[in-house]
Length: 187
Image 1 (cartoon, rainbow, N blue to C red):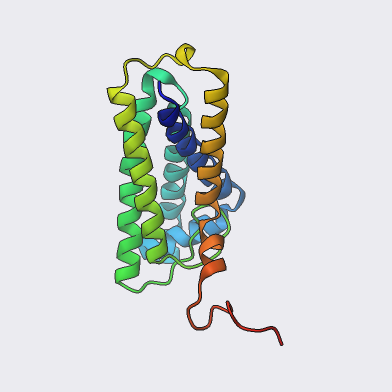
Image 2: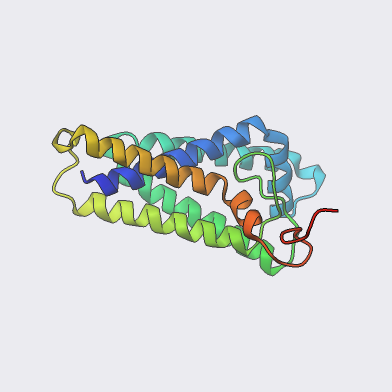
């Protein structure tokens, strides 16, 4: 196990765990966003509930799998697969100009847009790099790692997960497009 591989793996655990917990805490918002994304009428509420439950189960399973050494690679593959599916869903919504609130981490802060495609591509890259490191490392033995290096990996993973979780807020902070309010003097 390498420190970088550990950091990437733990970052993905953090992202998927925060995403699942956020959706559990704001389940109605998550279901509403999924209904809009799938373009399902209110009469198909049962389908939305099932899809939301499956998404939550997938996110939690991926987070747990990446913590278990003998299935961590499978968890990373599943993470990449889920992220690809979610990215395609976002891209479809953006292309069709469907206004869907981003309930990726619970309560929506903005509508799905290109920024979410970029975020997901970054996550796919992190998960892919973690998988490559995991596959090509000598072994998955954590006993070869030193406490200081593990601490730095955990810190790096925390920072990555934090940046991803608050990605919308960070992008909004630097958004200078018309109507964003950035660069506008207070009244």
